[in-house]
Length: 178
Image (cartoon, rainbow, N blue to C red):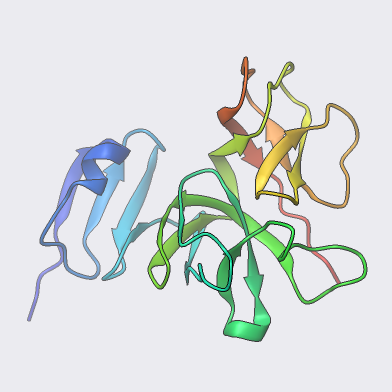
């Protein structure tokens, strides 16, 4: 019988470096201000879902923090990069944006996808104002600062400004599709 461990208070970087974890182990993430638990393959939390990453067939073979992903129901709901091949649009209801990669990985790995809360999103240009809409750029899975009303590919609200492309804090705003 294994006993679940509590690792105390750690930063995200420290958590990512833990070894010898067993399913059910817990840690307080001092960066995110929430508990995380070990699934047996990845550290995750209640703001996230865990799906296998599919990076084949011309798609990137790895994915990192901040990129937008969709679920591909034709392939056992594996997560794929929301690029020109896979993204939600009004004529194709098969794929829909599910969230932002919090902990990435390679093809076949489980990845952690934030679906609510405050997380970093990869913006492909400067974000000049706090509190404005960020929208999916369907060419590369990053976000655009649109600075206006949300589009049908709206993913969140900016929480900081940036001077160029890179990770930007945002609050995710899931939009359910019926």
